[in-house]
Image (tube, one colour):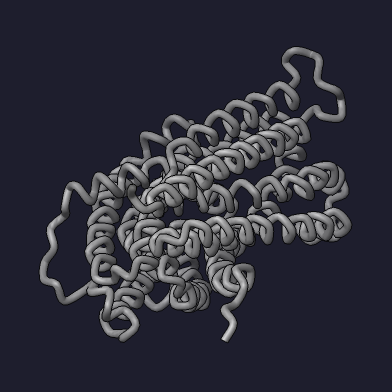
Length: 461
């Protein structure tokens, strides 16, 4: 029987990851839609609380992504019992990170004071974040489960739980937001309560499957007695995970800073930017899922010592991501008017968002190229240099360049780039710089690895 092509293998892993990612996004959409029907104050508090929680969660969960290449390489090398040991250490790391993150969320009033939020808004946002502190250990624990399944190329398990959680979101939200069955109406903080309950249900479901399902038995995650944290293993995870977490944090804050600067230009500019950014986030889920699948297969090939196969898989994944992004960009460009009208009928906001879709149509290619290449480099356990590239490009070129173009403090930016368009051009240019820098570095890494493998294969004289 012929083995399926690398492209087909990547595609077969991508679709369940993509559905799971879209389910996560849908949770946020449901929160916004339901709280908007409660009160404007609660909606504003939700937006403020989510912005803080996402920054904390993305950074900490990014550290746990170190498990993907580690487990993937062990799986490729067929060192299955060692996977269980790494997973147990990953759970310890998730516990330590959740303690840190929960402290930040519990002391959120300090952050809200910096934002000078109105008293009622700050009170509701504080309650939201303190309830989310209860969810954080479960969400990070589930990220370990997700990393395990993705690394051994079984993302359908994760997808099933994520879709099931999405189906529970509406009834739990309705109960906690609007009250009922003896519970008072919590408004925006009710979203956090629903998230907390569902997060613990997801965590218990995932790890119950690991304990009971035969496919996990060889991994020996459970049944080994109590395992203490091994500080050498924790240090290894942190050396790889901290740069990964920082890279996620840099990406998130780059968009956050864009929104802050664009807010100076008024509500219409912010609305046009927000629509464009929201569409871009949804579109980003496809290359992110492709990158995850590609990185998994590359890590497994590296673990098996198949360096040439790892290179071919990475090329197939990067090529597929770029081709699909080009096709999506063309569709988005021609359908831009209909897409914007799905968000708003306001002709002023429509006119504000329309020019920005020029950038979202072509920057998707750069975004797909950079994220897939970054995941491949992580499969090689390389994360520090890419993080430096992210920081210089996204903060320096993206935000710095966007500030010079969009706000034009020097007086030399052309008029058509004034406002949000200047920031989007800066962001697009920074993503292009990241993409081609990472691609060049990946080729350097692969040439070196293939050269070292060829040398080690030569018989000694």
